[in-house]
Image (cartoon, rainbow, N blue to C red):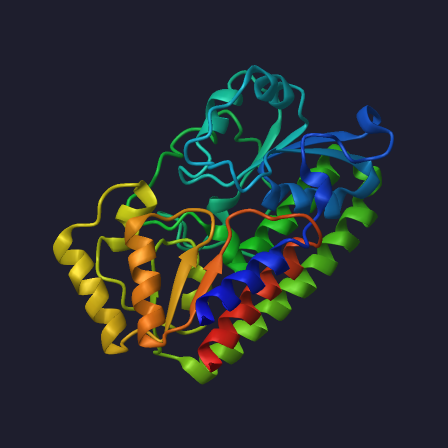
Length: 323
């Protein structure tokens, strides 16, 4: 029953995330402030925290029942984006629906994957040089965000990348509303301090569990596990097939079962919002082998901040490794 406890703990913890990221603007005064649109409530919650009462935030995807990979945008979504001052997308093919909505838009745009040091062609950002403020390159920045083979687009599970994203949200909001700079910077600094704490927690796990094997049914928690020093022992092609909704090859499935039954993986990491027969098979195999299962979610539920949600995810991983 370790799986049920771990999954329930994370889903319950995730149920503590900012409720205001839905399609109703949350800033008092509404249309008088800046209008921010985020593709998911991960980024919407950050915009709300940083912008405070100076912004109205709409998150297009704010329910676990919605899959950003396959989301079909509505006419209302298009109008919302066209009226935005700032749009925050994940990029990397994860929320590709936003690209059509941005056509003809004058909104400033932040693309989270571009702050990842793993992003193809990205050698990292010079943190001392530019503080991640965007130049006026918005004419081209909406192109080339199709799914990138070999790149894990789930960058919100990488605290280091998200520190850069938080910095850039504050910088973009300041460029749009200079009078709010002090408020934006202070709020961003609070989030960054929390995320630096998460990085420290992951470093502690690395010191204790470096080289420990993990199996993931989908790439979702990959950044988190790697930052904790764990080694991915998932057979090649398994997690990619599950994420894309295709059948796992029989030979790959047998190899996956062997990895779990042999004890090569100390923990099984899953996506609580998706799955299928192969994921269920791996969960059952892990339970039979006494391997803890930790379920992660792609979106925030109602209740607390992004940084709290991230801290809860790391704690659930730590608890599973210690079990």
